Length: 387
Image: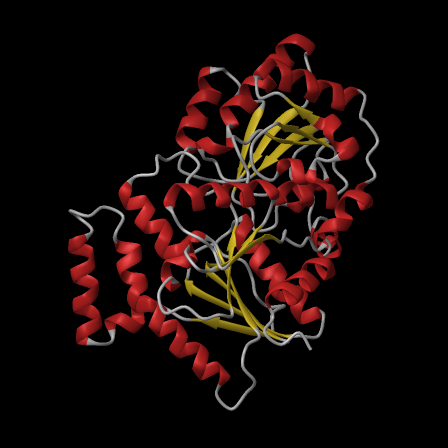
């Protein structure tokens, strides 16, 4: 098989980490696997283990021609009266550039069997001039906090109508079907294919260093954004600390636009010595592996890859109930680790797992997410040449 995995950038984030893992999984299975991305970020993942990596800078391509530069200026001006139109109008042109670059890769070589495009930001670059080999992977709930306005219906139709759609969880798939009804669109195919977890690589990476912290601690890893509900986690931690006098620290690994609000909350609650902001970590796994407990308090998750990463690190976990993919992971005896999304319930469950941890069969719960299972489903569902 010849496969391409396409993602907007390789910035530090769950979707980007999965794009690299999926590319490597196809490569390790003996396929001709390629990773394609469009934007460089100051902090990004290494691709040294990937044999075929392609950086196609659409901004540079457009700037090289007078017509392209004029078009860029025009769509930026149009974005002023027509807010959020920029991505779609730019994608009208970049779709052709991408297809041309794919043809160059296929010249004097075998064609791609399928091309996996990950995330809405990437779909916007490639929505026009589609190819039957494209598979668009929905990583999150679709428009979860937004009213379906006339413009959003147009946006949704451009991105999803008559496309091959793979959703990373049952919750995301249901969200997509809801979008089909609300926006009046219909996918060519829409199925669930979850994300792979490379247990061996994660366990190896978890031993690369030991976090510089002496006290036992609880950890959360992810973007510092309102959707992650870190304010709730801090409230639950404060409740537990006040009631039980725990000596555990709370470590938040990540960065995001809500960071100043979180810092202010920590200061207001006089928890500066107890809540540690560890910043963005290219390799967060040692922080997870050395924690006594991993806690996720998100408002919603597309899948919740960080839960699988915690399981791969053999770290116990507590998770608030939420829409999306959390329940795809927290099944059977893992349901015991779910709790209501309020500070008292979360604080009590954290304390219970710290003092009387329940046993977990980590391997059993990771098995449905192992790479070969996911690769086989992509090949079966989307390859134009299964042989």
